Image (cartoon, rainbow, N blue to C red):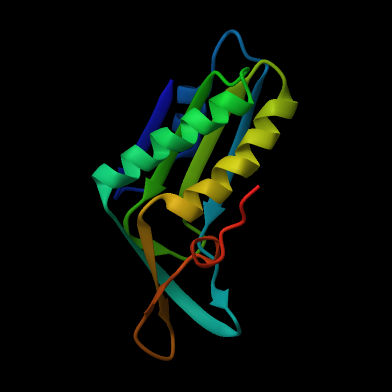
Length: 147
C-alpha cells in the first residue's frame, strides 16, 4: 500500500505508524520532520506550506515505484504532510515504511526523503521575526543528486 496525504490539521505520529503496520513486518521505520526556530542566524516564527495536490500525488507514486523496484521487501509507504501555517516545533511531515526487517526500511527512508524534496511540489514560506516571510527552494531541487 502507498498512502499520501496533505492535511491542514496537526499531525499525529501514531496514526501514520498504524497505517504502515503489517503482521508480515517486524519493522516500521519512521521519520518526523519538525519546524525549527532558525535559519542562517535568523529567527523563524512560523512556516507556511502550499502544494499542487494532483501533481504531488503523481510524484509520490513515482517515488514509491522507484523504492519498490530497489527494495522488494517494502510493504507499506505512508506519508502525511502539513499544509497551511505550522508553528515552531510542530510536525511538518510524518513518514512510515514497513518491512520484514529494518535494513531495507532505513535505506528506503533516506531515498524517499531526498526524492520527496527533489520532486514533490510542496512549497514552504519561512516567516521571520524581523520581516515578512521568504518562499524557500529546497536545495535538492536546485542541485539534485543523481545516483
